[in-house]
Amino acid sequence: MIEFRDVGKRFADGTVGLESLSLTAREGEITVLVGPSGCGKTTSLRTVNRMVEPTSGSVLLQGRDVAEGDPALLRRGIGYVIQQAGLFPHRRVLDNVATVPVLQGLPRKEARARAAEVLERVGLDEAMAQRWPAQLSGGQQQRVGVARALAGDAPVLLMDEPFSAVDPVVRVELQDELLRLQADLGKTILFVTHDIDEAIRLGDRVAVLRVGGRLAQFAPPDELLAHPADEFVSGFVGRDRGYRRLGFVPATALKLTELPTRANGDTAGPAVPGEWTVLLDGAERPAAWLGPDGARHELGSVYVTEGADAASEAAGTLRGALDAALSSPAGRGVAVDREGRFRGGVAPDDVLALLRPDPVP
Image 1 (cartoon, rainbow, N blue to C red):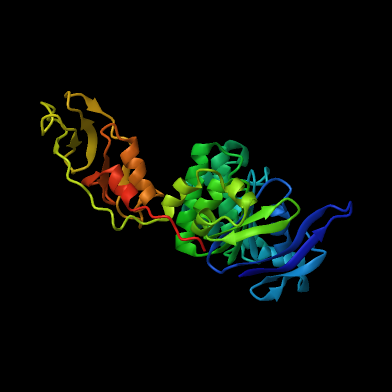
Image 2 (cartoon, helix red, strand yellow):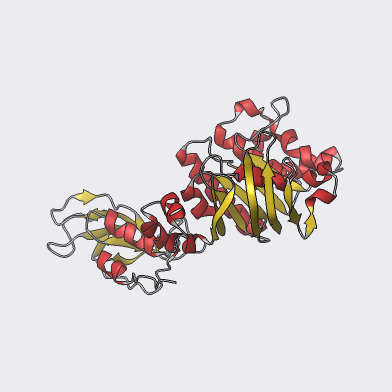
């Protein structure tokens, strides 16, 4: 657990970096700090490992004031991931990851063995271990950076905009990887980003900061989207917050509709005259739509009915169901189970009927 108690930071030139910040990053959760440039996100993060010393207040790690101990020892017990990975260019990937275990006193052979295990955990094969950082893509470098932070087996992980320097596709892959790792490891993670979509996707709780280092709102993503504290938070979260909030609303009450189907190779015509038909492969997975005119059409996105271990971040939610219905050329979505097998159809009106406005708190 990381606790900020009235933490303030005023720099030598008089700039206020933080103003009476109080919040708690709970154990085993991802707490995200988000806000515009100059709001104190990175300053807050760096007070935890004492790369920045607060001018007032205190930061507690597992109930102990971080100011009481040796900063070097403190940092060895905290994982730290920064933008563009910050790898040592003169060390191969394996030795980059083994750095922290070696500093913790582990023999080099054991440290390298641990490094190899962690590299595999973050999705990098053993061939990567002997490469130099310059031989890796940006996404691979970030995975190595995460692996290095995990190699010390620290319970706390600080992540300062770790995915902002990679392209959008790789960024989503890295976010998926982080969520998978967190499900397995249960670290206490403090994550900094300027991207509200990333904050909402990753955070168990999200802290929105204003310029000047003041806390505007601290809440779970669903509450942040449903009830912004003020106009600043509402504007920062964005006008489409209602649609994004659907990703947190389970679609347990949604009833799937029946859709006509036929085998993928059988395209003699729609199964029901005038109707759209779902073409299924031999494993009962939807492959395409067969239109009333007998032409094949792309499916659009599909709705994954189960959340656990499903590929879609919106699995089992109204957002996933509505997206499948609206992206389909047939005007109805296709629903599949966790293994991708066809389960039925999704009508947009049925999804919308489940939406009810929240009462004003």
